[in-house]
Image (cartoon, rainbow, N blue to C red; front, side, top):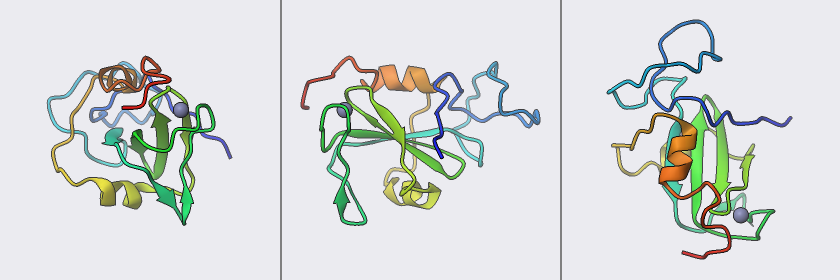
Length: 127
Ligand SMILES: [Zn+2]
């Protein structure tokens, strides 16, 4: 099953409006938390999933990822801008990778992708 990430969705806490599609959520000063929060984590290293190295299908990159978590889903975003839902990663895996308790917050996933350089601007560069 393919899941597309909505890059317009706020990374901050969403009020309990009963709708996940409410994209006009006001920016909250509180850190992202709760099951609806969209959390971002830069992961500059190579990653293995069950012994299989993660390789970007677009440019064959093997490291320097941005991980995005919402609910129990984790997406991997490559520096080239290619992104995919990774069924081998779940919320618990994401939590295990979070070494620093303070996460940066951005008004939207797209803003985070741009600010962190994962919007394809650096496609072809190896940092
Ligand atoms: Zn890539």
